[in-house]
Every structure is written in C-alpha cells, then in structure tokens.
Amino acid sequence: MAAPEKLTIDTPEQIPLEFPLAGVGSRFLALAFDTLLQAGAATILLLILLAVRLFAAAAWPAIGPWVAGGLLLLGFAIYAAYFAIFESIWSGQTPGKRLVGLRVIDVSGRPLTVFAALIRNLLRVVDQIPGIYAVAIVTVLFTRRNQRLGDLAAGTLVVRERRADLPALPTIPAQTAVNPWSGWDTSRITPEELVAVRQFIERRSEIEYSARVQVADRLAARLRPKVTGVPPDVHGELFLERLVAAKLRTP
Image 1 (cartoon, rainbow, N blue to C red):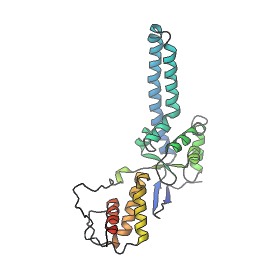
Image 2: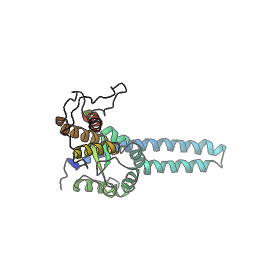
Image 3: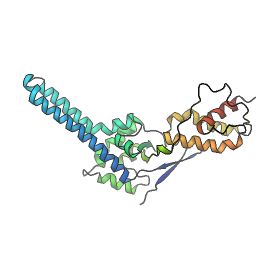
Image 4: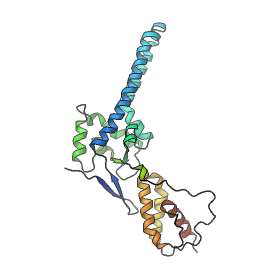
C-alpha cells in the first residue's frame, strides 16, 4: 500500500498543515550517519578500555575492573540510549536526522515529548529485527503515514524539513513605536476569528517550527484582507500579534 508523500493535519484554528513525510531512503541515510557516530564513540571507548587494562590495571589492580565496568556500561548506553537522548534534547532530531533534514514530531503536529522519544526508541530493538531493520522497512512501506512500530506505539511521525524555505520567526523590535497598530481598522474581524488568533498565540510555543510558520502565514493571509492600514512589511506572526493588540484596544 503506497503511503502519501504529504500528511495534512487540521489545527484547532482550522488551519490545515502539510507535513512532507520521510520515506525509507531518507530515514536510512540518517540512520547510517548516526550508526557511524555510534561506532566511532564505541571505538574510542574500546581504546580507552584497552589502555586501562594495559596500564591502569597494572598500577591499581583494584580499580581496573571498576573502570572497565563503567566503560562497558557507557558503551551500552551509547547503543541503547543514543537516539532517545538526542531526540529528547534536540526536539526530535539526532545528528543524522539533522544532517538529512528530518525531524520526529507528534501526530498532532506538536513537538516530540521526552516520553514519546523513549517509547519509540524502546521498540527500536523490535524494528531492527533481524539486524537490518527489516520490520521497520515493512511497516514504513505499508502504513499510511510511513510509521515504524516505534512510531505507531508513541504516536509520532518522521517528517522532512526545508528550513531554507522557512522565514525567520518575527519579533517586535524594542524601538517599535508605542502603538505600531495605530490606524489599523479591525472592525471586520469577528470575535470567533480573534479567538482563533489568540489561541494560536497562546499555544505557539508548543507547535513544531515549520507548523508554527504555516499556521501564522495562513491565518495572516486569511485575515489581512479584512484589516486596513497595515504596513506592507508586517506579515505572518508579527501581523497576528499586532492584530490582537489593535483589536483589544479598539474602543
């Protein structure tokens, strides 16, 4: 069963978000790079272990086994926890995923949580059976949203990013005039539309970057024709921030 190249998710603001789904090829390219990093780290630990056995153990026989045991434990952590740790602290990315331009997100479009990262990687041991990720390949190819078993259990997706195409998130400069929305006519903005914008602004920090930009741009494109007096350089998220301020300050 062929999976779609893109997935569309409707936000609470009724804005459809499009996520390009990562396929088997890009996911395994990222995995190959991550595996090389794991192998490199394991090699360094092995060299340190050999040095301990040759030198430290001879000088301090009692400490040698403890150092060796600690290094072996660290090696196991590199193998077992590498993906979960990086995906937790790098918002759904590992070095390999970052290089290839992939990111793990929640099926709702929100960023990956630590709990979901742990769940999806606990099942990696099953997905990689029989050592070449055959189970993962089959499930990615035959699930509607290109998910392996770990993704299905954790409620996650792997999507492709095109950060070069994404504008920087806007901020209001400190030197902005006290009333930058002065002269805006927001009388055609309905209370329901204002609620949708405020909901987005309140939860935007929970939304994955590309999804956040999509929501802001689409909301702004929908509402800008209903507001007069908007400078041409105000768009996207900055427009929404100032729209709420102008609407709330309208007598």
